Image 1 (spheres, one colour):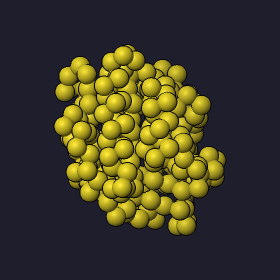
Image 2: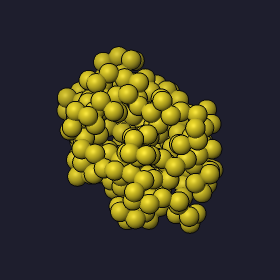
Image 3: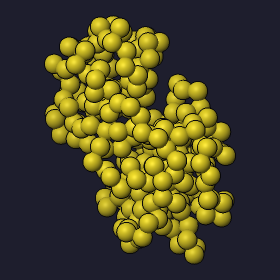
Image 4: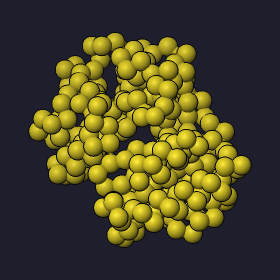
Length: 247
């Protein structure tokens, strides 16, 4: 399977492999490579169970999707997302006093994330362990908490996307329910960008969100991000059941 993933990477399909599945990403419209990409993804889906993996997720430009005949027949469409980019030109009104780094293994960290996500302690812990499996060299430095008057307000997880030239991403971002509607999301997002630029030495930022997530889209624009020309189709293939493909 590693050889197959490397072949995909060589023709512009990025990937992240975790304990349970694989995430694939195509960000450029490459119709001349569609047949080769389609064939390799089809092979990957056929081999999935042999490697004790359950799920493959794929994001690709909507205009490229129709060129993937095998992929269209096997993968379930689960959403459409929009992509924003930043080269960190816009100034960021952030200082190191605005945030703190927490351990992903501390029970207080897990409990706070559960509250922000509106999920159980067990679900939040699972999320962090999956993040650790996907980004083992970075996960312990990602848990970034927005602090106001010594109170935690929200959390963001900045990281460098594997197999890229120092491209920054935010694994997840969220404001605590007690502080929603106060315009704090822009500052939280800016904290993530600040850490990407100044601490993680990212060359650029790429943010992806659901096409109908208008608050997040406004935040990215407010922080100097520019919308990419294509929307992205989100697709999923699961051996077990369709529930595993829910966003």
